[in-house]
Length: 121
Image (tube, rainbow, N blue to C red; front, side):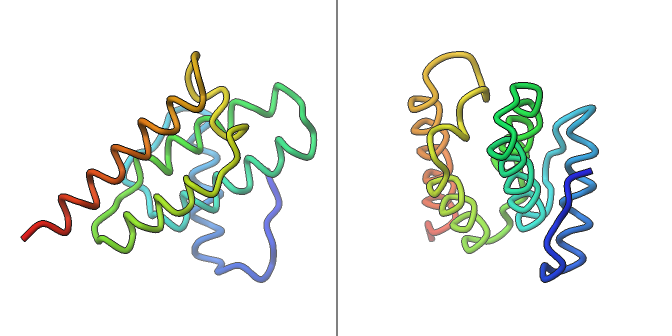
């Protein structure tokens, strides 16, 4: 299990740990956005520490959880975009075969469309 910071909200930490455990079997959809972001952050930091290719699959699944997380409000959707935009291109590698930059841009464009739909009258 990936360790977490004791200063984090325990509910978010518990949610993130549950997401990481689920990612060993499937990619959960409609997860809590904060927990999804925390899960990806933890998994990606672990990969960056080890640079072990066996640690790459978990952050690849966890970024999918962020992409598929529940965005019930414009603020949640914006938090999703802000987090995904802040990630280095390396975080997108392994997500799919092909050009990581292209996948990143297409994903962010889809997220931007969601925000646009949420703000339409």
